[in-house]
Length: 489
Ligand code: ADP
Ligand code: MG
Image 1 (spheres, rainbow, N blue to C red):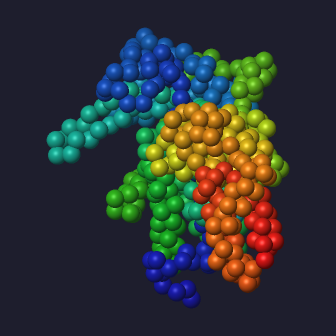
Image 2: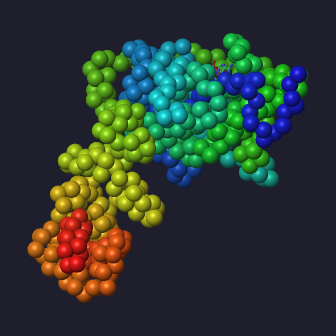
Image 3: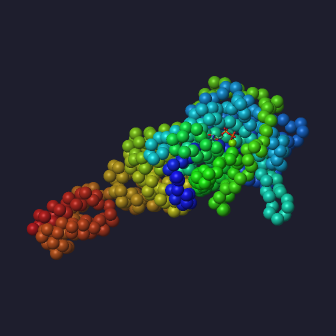
């Protein structure tokens, strides 16, 4: 006997979810996959079109070399087996967003097979296997005008290059699926092949979801969830589908193989088409395109453009003495990670650099709604500031003040320290003179100190700091004050 399903309860433990994702990633090329029209996002409707985009008779495809290189970058970064000779196929279906009547895709000879996406799960490196990555072209956009009885068509997106990344059914929870998707986005952004923007549609994902009784080896029947077009909803949409299937099975029903559309507004999904009605795409090799051949020289050239992956960076940062927290933060975006590397290369202490970037710099940028690329303090300049702190020329506290001024005025740390006379006073004689004056000026507090009130030392330090504009070296002040206070009894 199983308990009746109640929405809101933790997901049942007698069933296990099995999830595989198909991600479409729009490549950041200037022109389209098989023609010279602009591949830029947006633009006035139907302004990025040409005879080939519109499927006019007599127009022929020419493969975009850059699109292939971007696909190869992804294949190399995920450890795929790359096919030296792959082929493009026509996938036929009839819909107004597809002017040619077929989409060019890859079918039985994809460019990449195998490999994996790697990410941190509960703080540990974790791998999800990929089935394949293939190249294809995007379709146009339909705009259904509600109430008007018409649909508008914009072919700007038609023919924009995509890669489709298909995972094995390795994911076991909605949370894990969301983490996987984040890792895909992070990686394509690191590789510079896509902006991975789900809201603008440059990263789209379909989730294949099934459930099975825990302990069962065979997979259950899956549904394919489409239209998850925001990062915010990935986890929610998949969780909802897992619950729906468990509830169905518990009440004696069966899951049917179907495509379901996620409705973010209602927080629910509905059936779009059953797989029995699945299209026959009549795939066949595109006769207008020769096989795509990747020779070793080309592959070596592409390999040269590969950056270190986020996971390798994460591991390197741990090796440089950073905490897992700092390493995750700094590797979240490639620009941020590059910034840190540049500060570190200028000879700074890794931990100090991470702290300053994580608190002062990101704090200031966040307040301004700016990204790291727009930072008014460049990496070499931050390194220069940290250098002054490390060699004791200024204290950490003054450093923060200097940083604030660097951020606001674009001036360098030495310039500010010089102009404002902020150099730390380390001259024992000068500090002694100030301490002497302060001790003599406050005999009553001195008595309290000698009577055993150790805490009152803070008062004296505060006075000395006030007098020196915060520039006196605190350790030295403390030492001198204790000697003077103790010695006058
Ligand atoms: P299709 O071509 O119909 O989309 P595929 O066999 O290519 O079907 O599988 C697509 C995706 O579905 C892959 O990501 C795969 O991991 C996933 N998948 C396959 N079977 C299941 C299952 N039983 N439960 C969940 N996901 C599955
Ligand atoms: Mg599919």
